[in-house]
Amino acid sequence: MRYSYYVILGLLIFWGFGCGEHMLVDPHDEDSLRQGELTDINFLTGEPILPNLIRVGHVGFDGGQLAAKLILENYEDLPGTFEFIDRGVFNSLSVEELRESYDVLIFPWQGSSVVNADWETRLLPFMELGGGIIWEDERNVGDLQPAITGNGGFFSRSEISDEVPILTDGITNNLGTALVRFTDYNKPPFSSFIKSGNGDTVGLWGQFGKGSIVLTGVLANYYGHKEGMAFQQNYYNLALNALLFVATGGGNVDDVYPVDITVRPGSDHNPVSINLKSRGVLPVAILSTGEFDALQIDRETLRFGATGEEESLATLGNGRPQCGEEDVNGNGLTDMVCHFRIQRTEFDHDSTEGILTGVTVSGTKFKGSVEIKILHSDKE
Image (cartoon, rainbow, N blue to C red; front, side, top):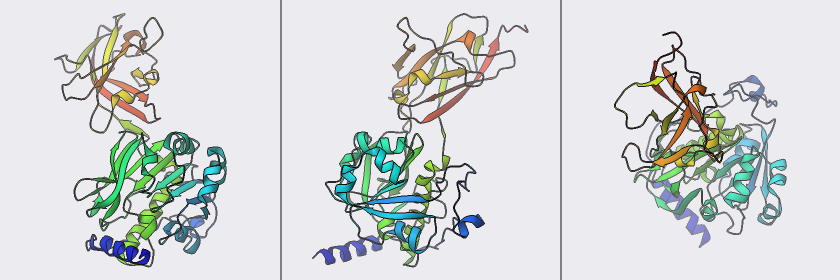
């Protein structure tokens, strides 16, 4: 019965695939990697991020094609080691011990339901220590809460919805049926990159400190094979990309998330005028969108001024940032409005732009800018 189940499941997934040209991805653009030599340089970014060997731990279930094992051991498309981690051993190891032993953890489809993959106490701390995670596990998707809500099932033919450097490079839309979807997640730090034909999010990525995570319901690690059918080769490439992506901390993708801001929300003047002789404060609204929740901002990290590095945030008598929550543009989403001391913004006569920077509570950096007009500078 178990064998028949997997045969039927494989056929269902295969039926979800369309036809299309296949393109294999060769990540080895440097001779040192082609020859299997070790390197501390991420050849895609030039940054010293990639470890000498990508040490991969595969948690629990050992079925399927095991694309990561093929990538590291059979075809040696990336330098690294692959090791199965028994569920009991995994649960007994601390986050620090896991990080000392592995650079990447894979949670496969049909994983053990007794694996302790709690988001707050296991996964997030692992990434904050610089580790990477690849997730295809439908049985333990509940462990992803409160960061992500999801469930298993059959979700119609999937395709790349958003291009992500490294992660989606060379991947065709020959992706077929997904078996896991993610119905609710924080934006940022998570971003969707694969969606089903019904609009379900079946692929996510996110960065946390120096670490990152890729979650997919299309089971690239389970079905991917370099010498298989076209869809399996496409999956193999996605598995390879995901492994490289999380091993390099997300490849420095979108290090700074762009946000929308407005000065003096509600003002009819555009650009807004700023009187440099004023001793007062300037209200700046950071706007929430479908992809960014301004309420997730760490208020104390906010900077605003000529370069975005100015520590101009005004504080109340108790030392807390002078910020409030309000829907300033009437779109039904609550925005963050904070006040900044004009005398600390470092604007001058030639300033035409105000820049705001900050970090969310989950560690995502963001930046926004707005056109301004200077009044009463020292040159006048």
